[in-house]
Length: 426
Image (cartoon, rainbow, N blue to C red; front, side):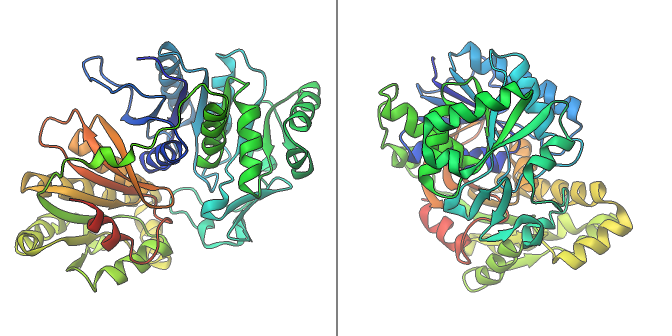
């Protein structure tokens, strides 16, 4: 198998978000969970997105994992590698966006990388190096309160500089709007100043197309799915890839089986989606305090689902409002709180699949990662889009029967997302 574009995603929902964007924009794409085992038969594709869980780990661990993935992708012919990050630039002063970007540059022929989390379709724009979410500066938006990596600074040049060894710079909107030559000229000037990573403004989709054309001539870029859109369109328009329209093939034939929803995200969007789900299905809200205290909420949840799931989909949620999350983190610690929720939802997912669930919707990045690992799924085909950033996924190479999944970043989707996703799964 020879590919054109490789991507290393720092979490699983971000990987499916990017795979969805690449597929929509004409690339035959597969999402793998980690570096594929040599025995896994992958279809012929233009792009491979390797899902890792390196967003919140130590920087050295993230760098090591990313470099192994980069080597695999280059070995399959990738002419460009995109490090896929969260569209809210989710990170800390220790990384991992800066360290991984610098490491990928160090093993390539490049000396500077374009960096942008902009994706106007989902309300993420960058102007004068500042990240806006639906028109609000990141540090004034509800998304600033991420339970693992709160984001208190919308100035991405400053954020990136704090976690990087080398200097960071800005390709501003006037340069992007002026076109590819102006962006290249700006990058040349930044190189002369010793800059290795350049935050790029992008407000409109056409800005992403400009950045994609420039990035494709460089070995490495870093960003959210927006720059993936630009890269995919650049590959198709250059004739190196033929526009693909086969997303619906991934969900044929039907998988059947039982259906369920699992939610671990505490975002405002997911909390509203759970309220809406109560109109369509039974919803069990786990007591997160009991989970953290070690009481047996997991067995009780499995028993609850077992009494209802034959009659239709059920939803089980370990989601809580921000004030509850803050109180639990203060008592038990941020890492312990997150780990307890991930462990519980993954264990419940495993039991539900054992009992015949073949259609599963998961909300939350960390929850999705834990669930996919528990189910030992090696890869996904990319199906049609459920909502911006969220495709239907069909498992490849699993030991059991095929499954259909949706892995949703907590902030994505409308209020009826869960019902819509299940209605598309057959």
